[in-house]
Image (cartoon, rainbow, N blue to C red; front, side):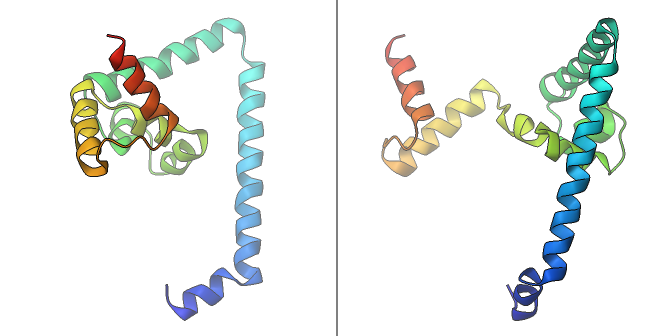
Amino acid sequence: MTEKSKSFMDSPEWRELQEKAELAYLRYEKECEEYWDNLSYDDQLKAFYSVVKRLVKGEIKENRSYRGVLYDVFGFDMDSYGIGMECGYMELHNSIIPKDEQAEYREWWYEKYGGKMVDKVTVKLDKDDETK
């Protein structure tokens, strides 16, 4: 990072921008919660069905990228990218890995780290494998 960038990151202007962004996020989140709460039960089910159907299509059936699902499957524009990150969709997208890729990743992991467990999830996966 350059000195100029570093000094901007430490500036009151940058902190103000961060605060405004956080407030905008909180406002949007509140609006979305109010929207959901004001839907009838049937409309909530329709929304749930519509979203999950598109996620399955883009993530599982078509194996699309994060942007591919947002732009091509949902038909959203570029403003959806940040909203998807804020609501956790990027995290969900990155956690969906086909079984064969999971096996390849685990094999790579064991080779790279000598089979050492570094987190509870990996340890649990190993214990699950031993019981089968």
